[in-house]
Length: 199
Length: 393
Image (cartoon, helix red, strand yellow):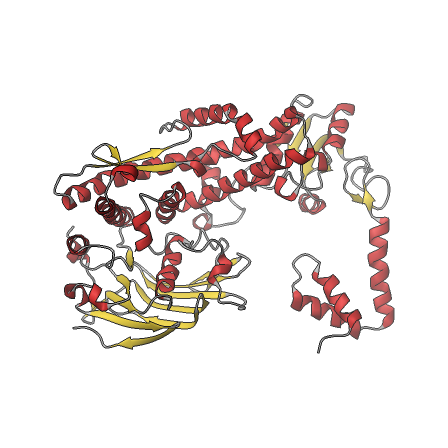
């Protein structure tokens, strides 16, 4: 015998979530069944509200509930520096450091022909517009060091160098507080290549 | 140093490198357990009983890849969630417990001495070394370029763990570029913007690709004189062996010059790549040529000569690994004795290091020389089940 249809449907839907397998999906579905109706209503409302209310910031394409996001509407941020990231979660990672006071631009992915993502599917036109309209002194490319991240970095460098004088990328090196012997060869080689003078 | 001096004797028993191998849901084995305390293990069985699967699993521990399976799902017993290869290995200076879990999806998990490793492929390499010599290798000369590339790569993976990472990123860049080349037929991208996009992949292909080429060139330079010497001895100085790396770009050993030539070749072949919808230049298209007395062995060497070449190359492979890693690799002989005549069998046996651990599969014990059987452990395989036969004295 199998589960009743509505339950099967719920399991199937949960299974579409990233990193959720059949067993986790089943656990999540049973969790929903075991909770009060009130809680479940709240959950479904939260899902709907998030989907309806969350929009893209008109300036940087970050997530926002209004026209422009919290960072872009903050007047104390340095609008002359743009840090380009792939996804909002990367933006959050840099924000958590409290070490960057400029603004961001969220691409919405990385160039990957295999997944059908070309430059035209990323918010590159918006970025170009932003750079040509405003006085931008530096663009920091903060993308993954994967093959796709590297391709996107190279592509953006080509596109942006006519319109912006200073284009930088994040440094390569050893993870902070780590032991040297545990670093993989590639990280070590890059750390050697980008070594700096002491002091 | 002569081979026998490095032999380690402990409690009157030789210490073998691979002490224990356990396979769970691997190929046709639901559960295989082998304890090895002899230098020679002979695996006997009819065809299609799973003899080679054991050697394949051992080889995966050294090279992180199967020499036969196209994808990991081929390695997992039908309908099982994952396969497990568990091994206990005694290296020169440590004891390793390796557990490799293989999922049909291609995801792997690796634990070494109970510590989960981040990169299951790259972190597996460099712990344990093997040389696989199977009857399929006899087609190394006659076979397709991909056979020869796979052989080159599987040896270099063991020697240089960085090579594996470089290869991975190279292959990824090529796959992405191919996808882009193919998609242009549908998307109708303008040539200018296509070229812009192709170039970002080419930049990375040049970087990792030229590293692959120069690593391969160095390896060939290293193995060539050793293989040549073996070939001289097999043929009593009548056949002079030469190995040449056949590169789709003009190969040279200077990093900057190589990158420049690579870039040039890619620019030249842009139109061709576009019309064929795939990358046609780079180490993924390179080949290796074997020459005998200056003539290409592929077209001119006899069956017997080809066997000699493969034998010489395999023995040289063993020496290179031993020299570079200061550790004698485990030798995996898959059904080769049936294919080698007596003089070549003799040559093989007499040119092996004395204390090398060897696994050998055969259908009939009569295929094997008596001398080799001495002190060997014999396992009989029937349908994925093992019975241990009395040890030969």
